[in-house]
Length: 343
Image (cartoon, rainbow, N blue to C red; front, side, top):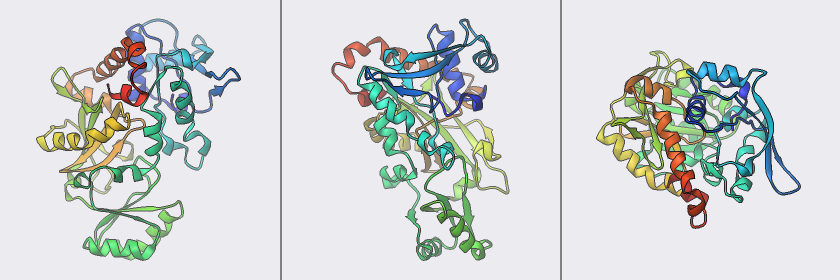
């Protein structure tokens, strides 16, 4: 499930996963937030699209076939599928289609009743609908944070941080609405606060000096750092000199990552909660000895990791799904979906 098939791109992690599944002989149907239906027979169905049968050499060829008039478009019964992967980003729906933010979660919960493995777990995703979820992880791995709508409290936090802090909205992603407050911009603090509070709560966060060197995206699979053929699925994101955001679509560049013992220690600290919440595939954004963000909805960048490590990490993800489905009939009699997600 994606936000909208029309906006998918060849390099997206979702595209790579679907392409890999099809090339390994599986079906991979695409549906979006508005395609679900709960029928009178209590089955979950959806209008979905599947590329013509065959193997594809690239994501571009696959997406072209998926959007062609030769693609199969059917009303499928979701309950009959092995896995429903929720790969939509609710932040993209803010202010545009608010009903679409939780569509996959709501319908996915029902599909679970009939034995579909839903990833990431819908209940876990519902707890992560905004950045407050990040505060539920151990304080040891988080920057100092204050969340409020009160202007005086925001100013006080910035003062306590020596006049330098990061302000961003509680809702949203991709570096949207992120401000760095420093001595030069303090005079504009009122305008920043006004712009951010217009849409809700404000996250006031300690500025990490190590962020000047960018951050590292490390993928977690089944509650463990994703390592395939001896290589970690990771890459570095380097911000532009005049922009505090390292997000690629905010202008950041990418480079090969070195996974340190410190990064693995952070992964181990957050692992228990990711497992408890049924988070199958997750992206950790690490700066120095701290986490900046945890992406649990549609973590992207597997292709970037593959580019530097020369390893097909999408294959590792699909192989993990194959293992789950191979024994699903037995395990689902004994375990919940949240357990199956990271089993």
